[in-house]
Image (cartoon, rainbow, N blue to C red; front, side):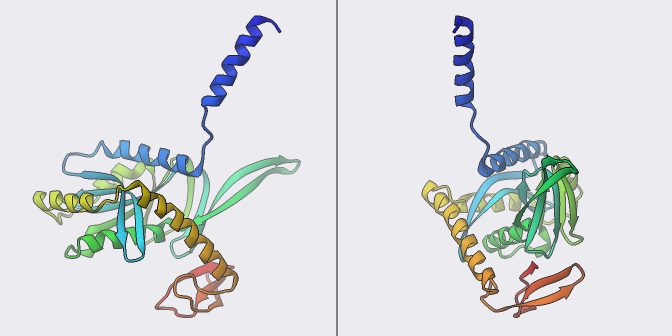
Length: 257
């Protein structure tokens, strides 16, 4: 083999060895970093806290970003997804649709379900509310933020679901003053002090998520509500058949059939 080809092969091998494959975790972290950078553009009256893990009644919950301001406390759930995203604010799962392999009749699509981020963010709101029990409920503002590479087909008239590019403008839209400057600093300090930084606890949190998902899938296979263990019953709604909890309205779990 000529020497220049040998050198070229060595260079390629080194470069390939340094390229880390993308994982769901790394993709998510990349999205969180991008949103954190965008939040740095906010003025000093907005105090930004990133990657916060708070205790809950059932364990822990991880929050991508919390912004404490005179105009409310914004709780952000970020999704670094691309492709088409479909979902309803009351559905248990949403779907990401990507182009797959090219067939002779056109492109196929691949669909990936994921947990409704609105419901996911509701647990984050409860964790913050537990730390700050005396604040007005309207001052807690949940926002779900998707990558600009995602095309959103979301039905959520009662919630905020936006792309990264609209984040700063959306936050600036809220102008009703809830807190003084001293309260903003105090609330941010309380949240930061409650943040769990122990790497072992954070590792356990990820493990618990996987176990909870497996447990929920087993219950759903038996048509049992993963929230309250009541039987699921088939119902017909605006969007077709779905499984609903027999404990409705006390439990509002639903899953599309």
